[in-house]
Length: 113
Image (cartoon, rainbow, N blue to C red):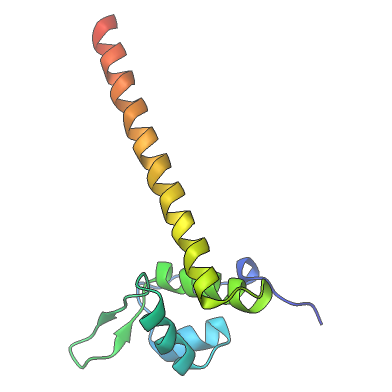
């Protein structure tokens, strides 16, 4: 039997998922998902009026990334936090760089017109 990577998992195209649905998609008990919410601040589901957790697709994708790091790559929670934090820094840097390039291109365009 082949071990599925997190990128092989098909996430239904829905706006929100209940915790039980997330558990089935990720193959995790809901207690693990609730625990990860306390450890990873990026997992922050909305709450329905009745208090039920509602996860976005991006939350499910993030949970799958955490699962991959912890279960497949054998990271510790601390190591996964550090790794995922470095992803955030890289993404922010790329975003800042893109904004600088955009501003520079606008300025060049103004000079040419």
